[in-house]
Amino acid sequence: MKIAVIGTGYVGLVTGTCFANSGNDVTCIDIDEKKIERLKGGVIPIYEPGLKELVLRNAEDGRLHFTTDTAAAVKTAEMIYLAVGTPQGDDGAADLSAMWAVTKAIAPHLREDAIVVTKSTVPVGTNARIFAILKELTGRECHVASNPEFLKEGAAIDDFMKPDRVVVGVRDPEVGEKLRQLYAPFLRTEKPFLVMSPESAEMTKYVANALLATKISFINEMANLCEKMGGDINDVRRGIGHDSRIGFAFLFPGVGYGGSCFPKDVRALTAMTEDKGNLPEMLRAVDSVNERQKTVLFNKVKSHFGDDLAGKRITVWGLAFKPETDDIREAPALVLIKQLQDAGATIVAHDPEAMENVAKETTGIEFCESMTEAVKGADALCICTDWKAFSQPDFAEMYQLMASPVVFDGRNLYDPARMKARGFCYHSIGRVAVD
Ligand code: NAD
Image (cartoon, rainbow, N blue to C red; front, side):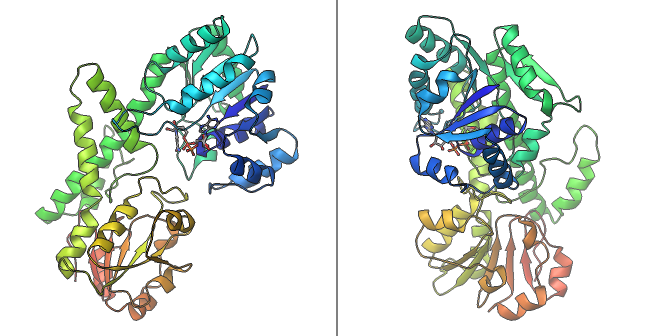
């Protein structure tokens, strides 16, 4: 199948590459000329495990192409995937300006039988609006389908290749069949291919993200209480997780969720709820609990050192919003760093992949390629992302290198009793501090 993917970001590049890898002829399009030039030269603009090898192999085999020429790519495509960004607008709702711009740009070039598919997360009603715009511009009823993406950054290739389910929203059963054929290579283990209306598919994506965000805010609120009650949230988590109605997934306390999806999607769903005259009480609480959770580590640092952090050297491990990515959009670490800097602290930071992105957006941070080097002379270490490399540091060396052995662990990576035995003052989330 000849496919055009418009928007070559985290989702578009993974989608295009995985479709090429299953034998399709894919052209990835972006307005960012530098990005396309780099991709043509074999340079991958984002960090995503396994992506580089797959892009290079499929490009070399002639199945994956990159261009800024939307018209040329769309003219021959049977399917046009729209994967542009849908960021949060000033009013909290999704900003669909890129989606509308692309819809207008492709209209004059669409084949009669082309299927336009929204891969981006778009508010309910967007597919219907795209259909209406295309009808106005082309004078015919074009096929428009919704195919929301559920991949997780950091495991995107695996998630795309082995999805838990594929959801498509179509008006015409034949379009559903075409999409089923496209996905057949990824569903060989009998994972479900779910066909519904575009409205239900659009809604499904938001409900999934909002429920996942709710789980995180819920466990964070419980963790904060647990800490005050003298309990250990990790034990509580085990205690509830074995209940088959509850389970273990997504119930890890931390410093709040970030990234390019949960925050904006919860707010977009809030805006949709308000727009229809309903009260988004749960959604608002999920968001505000999360905003507060991003300040939890800073409050612990202040309780330990006092309000004035002038002269304190504080190391931050983990800048990306989650491990195995270089994505720093809405990353809790950035909120913490700003608070620490405002209180006068000097920041030394380390992240395996995200330092370059943070350097572009911040000032005054000393970056360190080595996590061990980064703690040299530090008055405290704050951990914001649970990269695997952070789980087994050389504690004896760390103890020697730090000016004072104080750790604020926002991801509960270590055992409090062991940290105490190693001589550290150790604060974590939802567990009593030890010193
Ligand atoms: P991104 O910002 O990484 O990529 C978007 C790309 O679209 C950019 O490269 C940008 O230059 C390009 N673009 C913007 N306007 C364009 C235009 N007019 N023509 C061509 N290209 C244009 O975004 P992303 O993280 O890939 O997310 C894309 C969509 O997928 C969003 O709706 C997001 O909510 C959704 N989504 C993201 C994830 C994720 O984990 N990142 C997961 C599921 C769904």
